[in-house]
Image 1 (cartoon, rainbow, N blue to C red):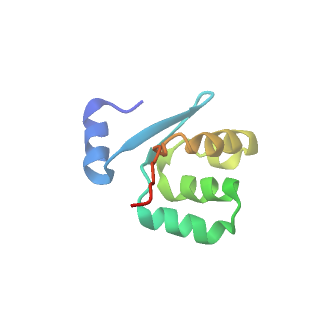
Image 2 (cartoon, rainbow, N blue to C red):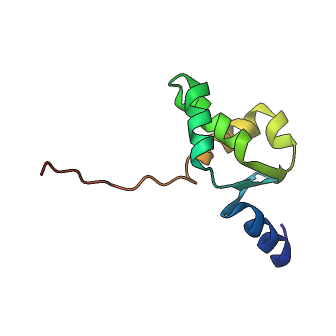
Length: 95
């Protein structure tokens, strides 16, 4: 785990940052921006898992490389990545 000063520095550089923990392994990820979302959407061809995979790769700052190299760890991390982006309920009405 990073200390408070290291976390402050990461937040100053990247904005919102998150720690993903898979078993004993950890990764630091940043919050995706619109460019990341557009890139992931274009590269995924409608595949939701692929979107998460691309976003995970784009937003990776640092961490244990085992998460990227081990299929089970990678799948766990990528599947939980969607928790970072919380879609809000929207109401639309005709005027």
